[in-house]
Length: 264
Image (cartoon, rainbow, N blue to C red; front, side):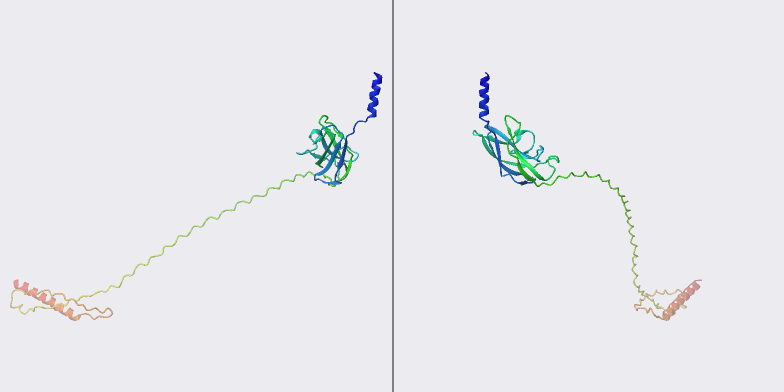
């Protein structure tokens, strides 16, 4: 049994195992916050599905950061099977173009702009542990150093302003009532007075007072209307009319006297 073990050990040491190599090309010399692309060629692994991850790190550290596009989203977590998948053919080769970006590294992982390293880590579907089979590539970051934002101090609330008192609304003054305008009374038209003078006439004379025992009746004279317009400014008294009236009245009185005397 001992010699069979020696023969197997001889053959294993004579035929070295096939090594997996990853070659990078078209790697940008400088990157920023924008996504970037690079080409990857793989040879040596067994046929199947491998998952490729882009790693960024500062030289001399193991603080890896960066995000790889897996065909749907950018991913930078610890699950190796969530990275970009490639199919290894029967010859043990594969080629792919990867897209990556810096992402949101912490200040520990990314202390500032300068020289960094880039490499590819590979995962297999049978083993989620990663293996690095690529040479590190020098790359420059032109990304400003993140500065911690200062916490804003709470500002004191503004002092309340005095609310202006509402102004008093002036009262409406009462509208003065219109004074009653006296209505002028119509003046009476001048009255024209027509004076009618009656001139008495003696129609019978008392010639037979002493011969007749009974008095002769004297008819009442008819009124005679004087249509003459009287002079309102100056008019002399009607003396003839007064004289005739007096004679008539005296005649009547004498007739009455004689009548009663003769009977007495």
